[in-house]
Every structure is written in structure tokens, then in C-alpha cells.
Length: 177
Image (cartoon, rainbow, N blue to C red; front, side):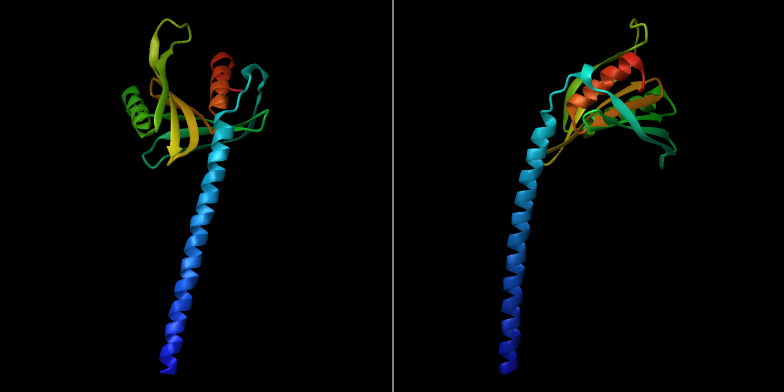
């Protein structure tokens, strides 16, 4: 009987420990979610003057996806220390690039903006452009501007919408920094 009580005491002790751990986990998740929401608010509401920003190239990479697409990544850091990524993918045809663009649009949490991509002279439409916002649950995780030009799919992504917009404006007028 003594051993039976010992086993019962261990079970109760283990149940109490599991209960405390569960409460601790819930508390940590609540604190973490609050911190993420605070970061989300701070990053999403950054106000920048695009003319005052500069972008420094900090790295790059290239490769081939599992489906055989060539891709290129260029990483930048803004003068106020926000990371921005520029990427491109080469598809077999303009149709496939537009299909991928449409898939990305459907996957996004929100389409912020949509418009045409014009030829360098501005007199002919050569593709579509979307600004997409992504959320993970209630937490904002990033924004990207994506567009297609012929068989190429391009994108600019960051956690800060203002920095994506500033890099896009910089890229559109001056080319890659």
C-alpha cells in the first residue's frame, strides 16, 4: 500500500508540474505575441523620406529551384538599418511568370496595390505589378512588391512597407544600387 501511495503522489506531482508548465507556456506565448504586435506596429508605421534613404549592398546569391528555375537574390541594408531583398526568377515563358505572379497574389494576406508595368519609354504595358502584405495570424510579417516583365518575375521584400516603396522608387528611377 505504501508503494501505491508513492505512485499516486508521483502522478499528482507530475500533473501539477505539467499544469505549471502549461500555464508558463501560455504566459510566454501571450508575452511573445504582445512583443510581436509591438514590433509589428513599430515596423509597419515607420515613416521615411525616400530621398533621405540610401541602400548598401550586403550580399547576394544565385541558384536553381527544385523546378529548375534560375533565381538571383540581392540583399541590401538601408541607411536606417532595415533589410531589403531584391530577387528575380527566370521562367520558361511570360505565361509561366504571370502564373507564378498570380499564385503569389492568391497566397498573400492582402493586395495593397495593383498596376501595370510600363516599358522604359512608358508607352507600352509589359507586365503586372502587385504590392502584397503578409500576416501570420494577427501579426504582420512583411510586404513585397512583385512584378513580371516577359519571362522574368521580380520582387522587393522587407518587413517595412515604407522601405519596399522607397527601394522600388529608387530602383525604378536609377537601377539597382
